[in-house]
Amino acid sequence: MADKLMVCKDCKAEFVFTESEQAFYKEKGFDNEPQRCPDCRRARKQQKSAGGGNRDNNRGGQRSQGGGQGRKW
Image (tube, rainbow, N blue to C red; front, side, top):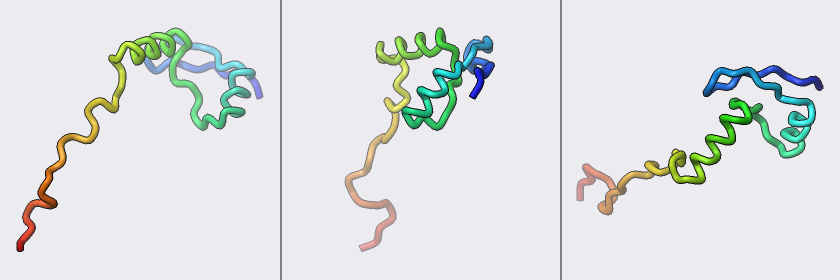
């Protein structure tokens, strides 16, 4: 395994995904390589902890209580 040169999807800067980081990801069972540089990962993590980045906030919506629409009795 060798170091990999990656491009951050947020800032487009190049960063190195080191051999030791790759081993850590493999050990933890992570399937995907990092998409962001360490600075953007750190910023995103801070944003999430501040409550601004949870993409699950709007999931689910309202559910009707009456079963299904168009049901004939």
